[in-house]
Length: 174
Image (tube, rainbow, N blue to C red; front, side, top):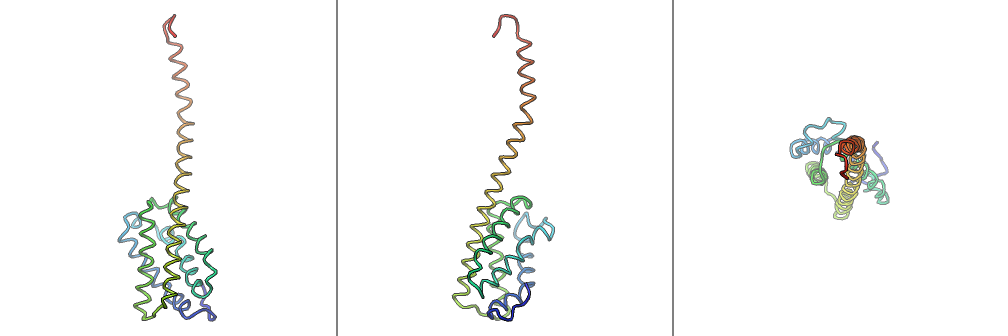
């Protein structure tokens, strides 16, 4: 996200702190989340930069909540497909992000107002819910695909075994 001179001071501070927050979050995720340590950077970072930018914009234009929601859904789906995460790791990832964000604001000596902090907290909480829902939906779809594939793969051998068993019955047996 390019710096927006029309944005609120908090939004501009977020833009300025973007690299620090993402770096702090990435380090925390790699050290705290078992599955994150093995993920390549592009998969670990995933939608986080876009999510971050949406939060920064949210401080200037509160109507951007729907964009945060869409990004969170995408993040949850990607985590289900690519990371080996479970829902607990997904939630912890957002909690680490929140901590890294507020820590970096503190280190930069930039104080958020109560309302700004609440807006960020609310958006992150909403993102957690949206991500977990998307994660569960993708996991369910993957399970259904797996079951359909297994069912298809064992149907022919079972049919052949059934036919062979019927052909080998002794005369007079049913």
